[in-house]
Length: 158
Image (spheres, rainbow, N blue to C red):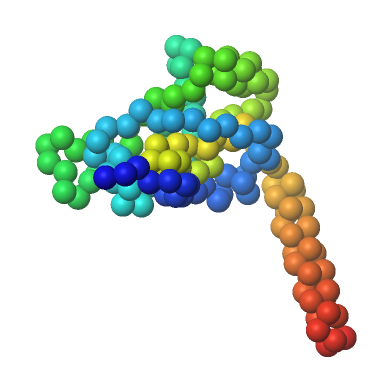
């Protein structure tokens, strides 16, 4: 069977973009078992409460939920196990240097298949305060109202 081409998104973490200011993004592979890959291909995963953390000079993804594969047998995986992230040593060192800064964390933004390989998009993020979140919502609403008014004007309704 030929390998699939393109990018197929399995899960995205929309709440992360609301709760954090994303400074930079990285693409990392994941060390997965066979039943985890099959469950991901079925489109089943959750990134709620997931985060990446350094341990022993390597990066690991904690809290990501991949449900057990329905047709799996005794070889099935544990749904919330810690998964190793696969990055180049140079990228890991650069990330760890940035993580040493106060207030920065690694948050998974999405899980997808890129040309058949399971990947996770990580965001180097700084947490937002509640007033920052309110400002973002107000700005989004104002932009939406401007687009709406421009659309009405273009149609000759005003």
